[in-house]
Image (cartoon, rainbow, N blue to C red):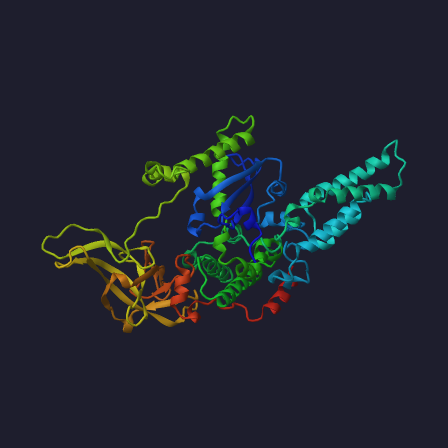
Length: 578
């Protein structure tokens, strides 16, 4: 059946545009003095993901020091897709907040401590809206106590509708106290109820009355605030903390690092397997935090949000696609516009300034003048302007070539390079660790890149054959017990060097030396001296190429391992400590 909008299009192509709406509260001051503003930006979600990570493609929409995100969205109600951070998610879901009896904005039941470790039964916007309508009707009676009791018992309290609830309470008493009033309480109530029916589009949260959008389901876990700014993580810190933290603190860092690397992937190969791994990793983080300090599970709602990761990933795909780092970074643009304004009408000045910037960006990429080749090529030839506008030009790389040669050797047909480019389109420098995929057997090998050479044949001088000299390692069939990571060793403890074609290099990865097995000892000179041991770990906590490592290695070497055999027993014990 043809789309009804085709009639409006009149034969022109019809496109569906996905716009990602981002709202945030940000300080307008450069100092630590809080000067709160509510900002809204949009990004065009039809663009490739690599472009969505560029500041150039973030567009300013709204700004106000007074109107909240919910009020601003009422003026932007035609937009369909929204991503918010955890505190704002509570606001747009009509949720009482993280300190309520029901701290999760997406879950409606609370049956003890176990529910904080599980996603639970989700709320639906129809149920939230029905409860808000009930509270509005109670406000028409002029009594606040039953409203507060309902909000406490169910956890439904919408910040936007609360303004109108208070208005109705005050209005009831104003009418009743009026000298000319001849109406009974029931007549006043009926009058106010009729007013609410006539103004339902005004008094209810726009996110809740919007078609085809459920804020309890369509606001995924935001990994910037929940992971990077929530359960703080550094990709190699686990190796530095060994011996510096206690035995009950170390598993917490280990679990956090494992979960973070799983979440920062650009593509999912096996959805069911990946979701199972994420669920185990998230459970490990919750259990280890609870075991270390049970109060964190109750006081830190960001920990509970980890239980919702699998369902959000199934709905939205890799969560890096809905991460908000670039929108958060755009706050700096707003802040400098405010600081450099005359402060007489800052909201207007900022809107005009950012609108002018949008016009400039439109001109710099060619605008509506496709015949002006000079204008079209201007931004591509000006790296300074690219940086100022947040535009990132892809670096041209030649896959399978050695680059950045050393000095020329006239008597040699070989040119030694400093790096090469793998088939995953990344620069592999000397001493990089790379995966090598045989073009004949399709078997993967792990290599330590030693040298890069290019030979120019006399017959075909324009067609170089590039090779690399590598050190061959093998992956053990078991994982290290301390770090839970795959172990790299030499074959038969002997050094094996190979000469291979650069075209067979697949991708590079991060390794860390096995210092524990090397039995390091501190000397009197106060530095660490390692014994000779060619044994390394594949760093599964690193963000780079995690998805390719999982594809290349057997699943039992990369899958998260449950750290607690019976979590419910642990939860029951911890409940007595609270």
